[in-house]
Image (tube, rainbow, N blue to C red; front, top):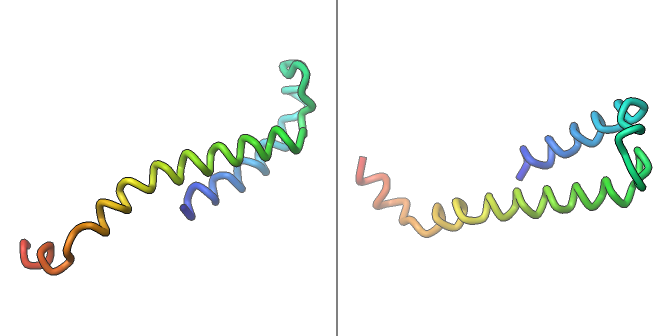
Amino acid sequence: MRLPIAGLVVGMIAALFPTRVLTSFLYGVEPNDPATLLMVAAVLILVSGAACLAPARAATAVDPVKVLKAD
């Protein structure tokens, strides 16, 4: 989860710079609306957490001794 969180921090900082250009494309939302930014961040963290959950559970289900003996 470190990589998605780092990407989210960099993305949030980068999202603050092009606000003057994007203002004309936004309808009903301010360019730096904190509620929108937090909602997008929450959805991205939930999706990346769900994507990390299945491989992590599969990795913990394997016996390390059997894996080491197999090689």
